Amino acid sequence: MAGVRVLVGTKKGAFLLTSDEGRREWTVDGPHFGGWELYHLKGSPADPDRIWASQSGGWFGQLIQRSDDGGRSWNPVGKDFTYEGVPGTHQSSDGTPKPWKFTRVWHLEPSLTDRDTVYAGVEDAALFRSTDGGDSWAELPGLRGHGTGPQWQPGAGGMCLHTILLHPTDEQRMFAAISAAGAFRSDDGGASWLAVNQGLHSEGIPDPKAEVGHCVHNLAMHPDRPDTLFMQKHWDVMRSDDAGDSWHEVSGDLPTDFGFPIEVHAHEPETVYVVPITSDYLHVPPDGKLRVYRSRTGGGEWEPLTKGLPQEHCYVNVLRDAMAVDRLDECGIYFGTTGGQVYCSPDGGNSWQAVVRDLPAVLSVEVSTLP
Amino acid sequence: MTRVVLPYHLRALAKVDREVQVDGATTGQVLDALEAAHPVLVGTMRDPTTGRRRPFVRFFACQEDLSHGSYDDPLPVAVLRGEEPFLVVGAMAGG
Image 1: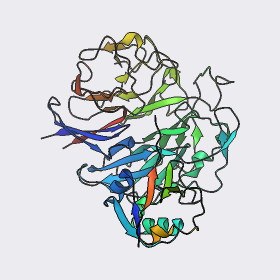
Image 2 (image 1 turned 90 degrees about the vertical axis):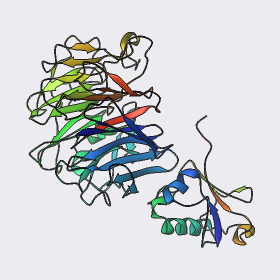
Image 3 (image 1 turned 180 degrees about the vertical axis):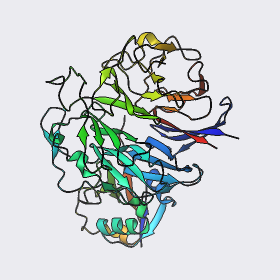
Image 4 (image 1 turned 60 degrees about the vertical axis):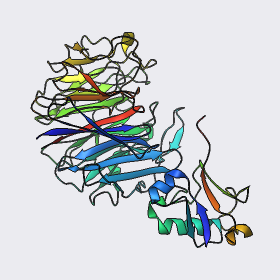
């Protein structure tokens, strides 16, 4: 029977939530790596039982864990994320030059076709790739070496490469997003990169329309329309229909266009989900009401989804990697909160249930759809 | 053999009991031996490239903080005799 395995990274460990296709009854397994920060876990599309996990902490540093049996057991793999060549400098928060320094892995993006290949987005922002099951990592230095690199600066969470999108059919094309630099595209397998931020407007930088410096929070793509991208920026929800060459705003009638995650329905390329947050200085839902907003028109027109979500006294946040969709016939939507709740909607967002309510603060949510 | 006590998280990573024994008469030799026996610990106590101790890791023995000494300094005699352990400590932090 088909089912789902939801991979939850938290401030104090990882949890695996499993269910059948009904997605009403759940098994909760964890914590794995209790006491560690699990910034991200993701299953390989080529082999859902292979799961990658970024395990880190301020005391003992970064590890990468790999499971080959669906999370029943784990083994540490390579963790040497040495920058290629002389790292150079980017901007620190106060605008002065600061040498690039590895801090942690924010995001792991497994290859769509090869179980041994996985990409890692790290802080300070750079992209690494392993082609040997995680034993070794090599930087794709063309991204950090982009001519604008010295202008990149950290967002509040650090200067992180947090989003990696792989083209579903063209292995040469991929996208990455960095806070606070912007979105980038490679058309040659990651060797060279183009800043794709035309149309973005950010008030917090000297030139609001600059080539780089935009605090992109998250990108999403539907595999059937890989030239269409959706972006949740620091402020503004944006859309591109030319693979990032140009962007236009689709915030429309959202109550606020600040937020972190953005996702696309598994079977409806024009159905998009965001979680509006009050503002850049108040990372809580507007009016204490936790509402996912859905657009069935590719942005512009949005409807609040509230059934099963707290509609009073709710002051949690949903971080950029903490929302995911499954690929079952009736698409399921999942998100986790900084208050430790993980919600599931088995019906495309019409109704929600809390799978768990009292986990540590949730950093990431991904889902593997199981045969 | 030098007795080494690891903190909880490193014991879990290395899949060992609270106390392990390695060859080593200096801090550096003990760390080298620990990392050789348990490669998963590489990078968890010191930077693998520079060798610099991680900020929230400390090395104690015989009620002394050895963290700021040289890796080449000899360990206290009581440690070398096996009477006292060498402690790898995750510093108290976080409020």
